[in-house]
Image 1 (spheres, rainbow, N blue to C red):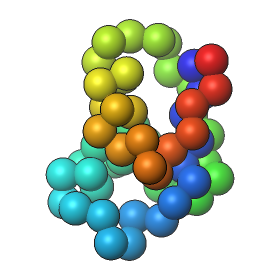
Image 2: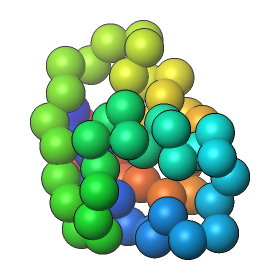
Image 3: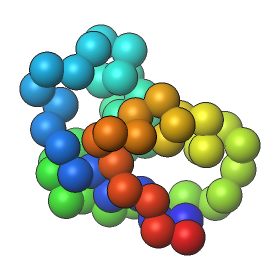
Image 4: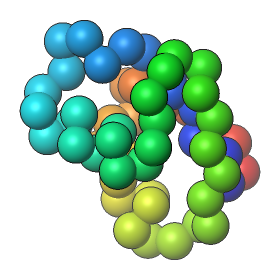
Length: 55
């Protein structure tokens, strides 16, 4: 699955910043590819307003 950052880190909570850092998303429109695991799904579920997911 591909995860793309679509919103800026500005204004998000420290917990959300840690999640985005763990996913490796640093810049807007940055895309990372991950295996579809429950752990990654859970991380993405915590920041749904900031990322787009492509299967």
